[in-house]
Length: 149
Image (cartoon, rainbow, N blue to C red; front, side, top):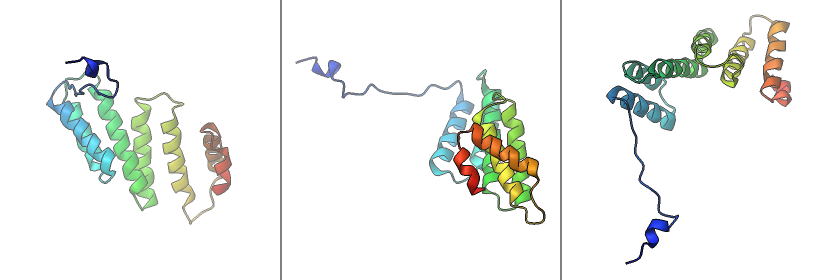
């Protein structure tokens, strides 16, 4: 018998998952289910609630992340612009607790908020909002998309 299989690079080592406790395991599985289907943001809310019960020392931050992502998804999927903006503001508030102030996710959520603000048909958009959106696009490296506003 030869030991060729030990040195064979096509053979993949076994993989496994390690969790602090059952709460973290359930939260991860809920998040993975959401990631695969992108269907129900409530899965993120459930994941946030589950991970908050975990003994993982980073559980509070992970819970906040899931909660921020939940509000973002609700805001993006919401048809009513007023409700969507409320969800997006809640998302920004939660994200600001865990990410640096110049993080790209904050800029993307703010851009979505401003897009919803521009869709108000009752009044003309404020010039400050237009300039802020242009600045965010430039910071994200999407300055060529400004013409699509």
